[in-house]
Length: 199
Image (cartoon, rainbow, N blue to C red; front, side, top):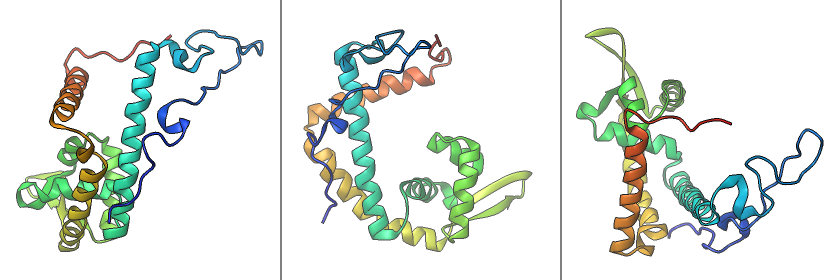
């Protein structure tokens, strides 16, 4: 049975209908200044429709992630981060990846992958192995225990993802969501992509 998740309209915090605190300025005035506006829908200077859309996107991802985490913990005692690492290793040639390649496949910083691999190695889900062609390189290798955990978790993960996300979308919805995500990701990965300007 799939874990229950908050319904789409459960509470303002999920739908972006709450209020955004307005920080006081240097004189203690909480009137609208800078990027902040009194009406929540105009918070941070965004178009109201854009702000509402952003709140929907973040609420969707947060609730889907929560449902997946609950299922992973229940079925296999692993986290979403554990599952992501195990999945990357399970589809890699020889069930191993260089630490840097693993970080890149997940879009993680090297420091994060280092801490994650260390914790997983302590639990026997992965192991480190020296790279014979690069004395400074390290392989991250999927262990038998890690493979078992991934196999145990996979069916429930897919079932939950289908229940909380894909079953609620028709083919056109999925195509539009996929296209929107691709456009944003491609823009962020473009060579000339620039960080958002600061004020």
